[in-house]
Image 1 (cartoon, rainbow, N blue to C red):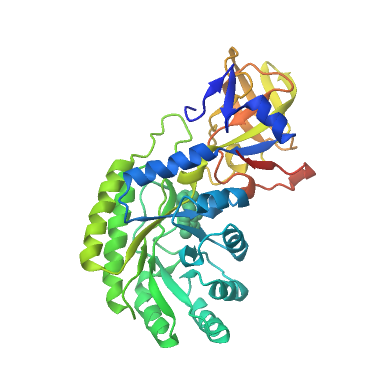
Image 2 (cartoon, protein in one colour):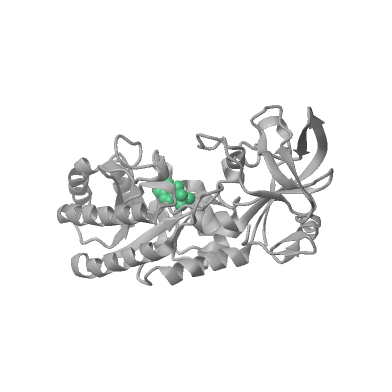
Length: 400
Ligand SMILES: *Cc1c(COP(=O)(O)O)cnc(C)c1O
């Protein structure tokens, strides 16, 4: 992967040769997230998007507190999806004014926490509205709300669809006028709309189409709103390439599309700021998972590198987090990237054939003690994995 340099036959992560970084961490397996790459990714986006568009980090992609703190200093806001994530964002020093809280099944206590913190709640169900009104009254504080809209269309080309059709997310567009009336009647502070159609999309045209449709939908719905729109969150879904043949997302057309929408907003929704919220795209490529080879076995001619971590730390790379067909994440042997290649499988220590990190892949020839590196591991890694499964030690995470 070209985002990481090499030196003396080793991958360089966070300015250190991988064997040195592993010694610094003190144990394997670990995740390492590279600050320089995180900074570069945000700068690349800022360069491609119009300055009026606010950039939020959706922290469910990677909630490591140190990383959230670092991101909070780079982006314009943080999107949280639980009371637990809200705590991390606030601890990290994110401005509550620029935190939004989405997610189905928010418990009453989480809604009260949101009002007390002064963050924007992206309401996913009208059930939340009276709870927010009661919290507002009890605390003597405004309840800031936006409505998450479940539109009547789907985002094409998205790896995971989260809008259109029957969904547990958001409020069906048909029911929005009623919800707006309820917001007015309850005296909640209405700020705008939130649309999020799906995740891991590599097609710029379909992202642009979703943004335009979302904008037009919000424009239409705003006619029934109890107050002018102050925020329009158009979602995100920007993907990163994982597998051979996948093309990296072209930001230029998305930038042009958003510039046109900013212009329209100036005339048609003059008080609204446009927001996009990205998780994976911001952090996914900046992270690696590093696990040490514990055993090298040959079974009927096939080489197995048995590692000290696998599916328990990195469910996504094992192919068990939403993939239909299992494919290998990009990988290498990070302390000997220039060794002669051989066909090998890297597996974890769990007693299940699902614990597969690399299936018959060309890897530099490796032996016991070497370091298997899985790239594209900065998003949906440690926090999206079943760590207690089989009782192995928890993975370490470092920001470098
Ligand atoms: C998961 C999620 C995100 C982040 O998705 P990515 O694909 O990681 O960018 C953003 N917004 C909402 C509402 C989400 O549920």
